[in-house]
Length: 142
Image (tube, rainbow, N blue to C red):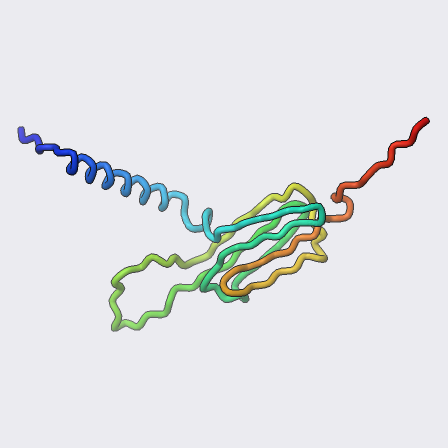
């Protein structure tokens, strides 16, 4: 039986290869729908702001919906048009439908929600519903 000779450099390169393979497998398992688009959400006493990185997507292909504390964003990034004469050398940019949902710690005034798209970033302003805003209660001495 042949046993390959292991050196420190061979062991490290093999370990890197295995790590890259595991990362690739888990990356495919998570899927673009669960991690795309990347999102940041900030909240304060007045509401929340959601920012999502969605480069290369036509704003007409993005949908935002809100119900109570739930915010949903969905859309589709279309595949780059390629002529039949071209051969793909490298393809890293994903395409297809995406959807993400987020639960806020308060209900949203859905009639006052606004959304804008600039430089590939979707920004959604989510005002807190009046009933969900903290209310200061004055304590009376008896």
